Image (cartoon, rainbow, N blue to C red; front, side, top):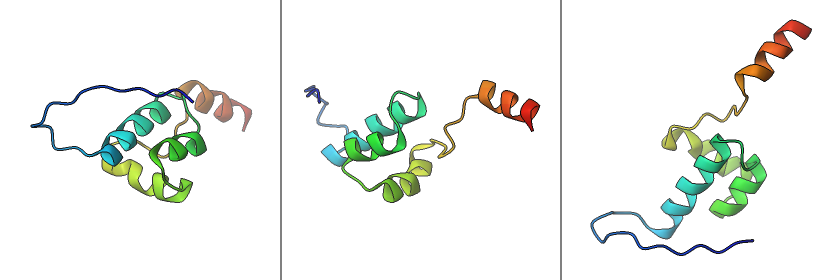
Length: 75
């Protein structure tokens, strides 16, 4: 696993857990990580991660529109 370090201004009120969740949620939303991988990155169980996604405006249903269209045609 890669380790990344960066500086955040003091006036940004985020702790390490918040930052990990933001990064994990973003990567999950973009399809770069599975739910399990994102939960692990955030240091959470899959269930807790899934429950918190809404707080970060990320849908638990990470399903590309093209897959949905294909599934409807195949139904």
